[in-house]
Amino acid sequence: MFYLTTAIDYTNGSPHIGHAYEKILADMIARYRRLRGDEVYFLTGVDQHGQKVQQTAEKEGISPEEFVARNTQKFSDLWAKLGVKYDGWAETIDPRHKACVRSILSELKDQGQLYKKSHAGHYSVRQEQFLQERDRDDAGNFGPEWGEVVEIEEENWYFKLSDHTDWLKNFLEASTDIILPTFRKAELLNALERNVGTDLCISRPKARLRWGIEFPFDEDYVTYVWFDALINYISFAGYQAAKNSGLPDFSRLWPEHSRPVHIIGKDILIPAHGIYWPCMLHAMGFTDSQMPHLLVHGWWNIRGEKMAKSTGNVVDPAILADQFGVEAVRYYLVRDIVNGKDSDFDLARLIMLYNTELANALGNLCNRTLDMSQRFTGGILQPGGPLTADDSALQVSLTESTATYQTAMDEFDISKGLEALNQHVVHCNQYIDRMKPWELNKDPEKKDRLATVLYHLAESIAHAAILLSPVLPDAAAKLANQLKLPGLTDFKLADLHWGLLPDGHIIDKPTPVFPRIVSEALA
Ligand code: MSP
Image (cartoon, rainbow, N blue to C red; front, side):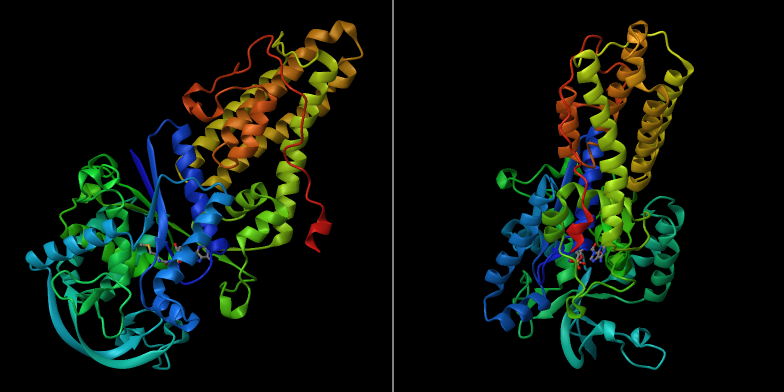
């Protein structure tokens, strides 16, 4: 089982292209894994508790329940619009999740992993945590990233994180592929070094924060939002769930010797996913062979700046999709970013990449091939032969592109996978220009040669539709329909072979799948 999750999005705001990128990336990986023949479970959802939600709801004069219901809807509507298809949906106000968090708290307390103590110090309202001396900047101040900082003293529950950090350090040092891309591991190990001896405050007094999961053994406290949120990866996978809960069977999703893949942004690796979460799992008895992979992606920025409501530079994916189509948005967000690195959102590049690689290259290849097949052979395909060096080179190009695509996609590198696919599309367009089927059609002696050329093109498009299907499932289905290629959704990579389209197969007329975006759309 390939168990894949994304971060769950805060519901104190609306989704932007950063959230959309992560969910689209996960959707493509899930679809690719299915194409590879894996059984997949893809979980995503929303993070609904915490001080920010309580405060924003208060400001708007509505209850937190009403506030999160409204914002949750925005996220799930967007995923439906963008074709993000998940198997499980996590909402942290779900009673099944709350029961799981509470039961874990009780177990950890029984095992002596939790204790209560009083602490006086600086507290960041924005980050919902106590700050330490090391959090001050060079000038000795708590920087703007912490928002409002107040001095408070309060008694809270702590998790003995420090009991697990030696284990984590050894585990991380010995592992080669737990953190992907691997360059993030050094940052994490440094952070861990600085964290030694610190425990994790996992409660908030209800007097200050009502909107959270109540402690099972101390009703004056609710659970710290990160401790609550991280548990979604197991609660919604059926951990400790009742048989009739409607949740999956945990032992199938996350068995012994099996690592799920958590897709997260670089901002939430340290400390939440890289330190707290493995230590929490370790405390719960998860083994080293069950520790999750963390696939850490970079950020989408605007002209080098972080997207923020306050600066008004937030890009709404729903508006983009209305303007340029879902295809263009899905394609751009994974195509114009290097795995693990940041990228700058640029509308001109979205249009350019869509027009160049989809409308011009792949779109034209399909239109030209299907149109010529209709006009010259009545849409009937015949592999024909004998093969020329050009035909063999085209077949080699397809084999090589497919192999490069597969390696890249196995490494979660969608952009590289698409690049490999595009290379073959370019090869096909050059093959058309060299073979000139319109010239061959003028010579009755060259009917067989014409059929062979058109067959090579149609067969290439059939393969391209299959390889493109995880990324642009609707467009791929349209291409497959025009080729009358059945069963695209059940197709497996292992079934790919030259000759998907049989001798005598009849294909349809072309209907443009990638209409060009005209630049007036920018206005
Ligand atoms: N609720 C926490 C995650 C809890 S997971 C147990 C959270 N939420 S978030 O809404 O702030 O971010 C959700 C995901 O979106 C994170 O992985 C984050 O890195 C990602 N992104 C938020 N802004 C982003 C960009 N501008 N670009 C790319 N992804 C970014 O953190």
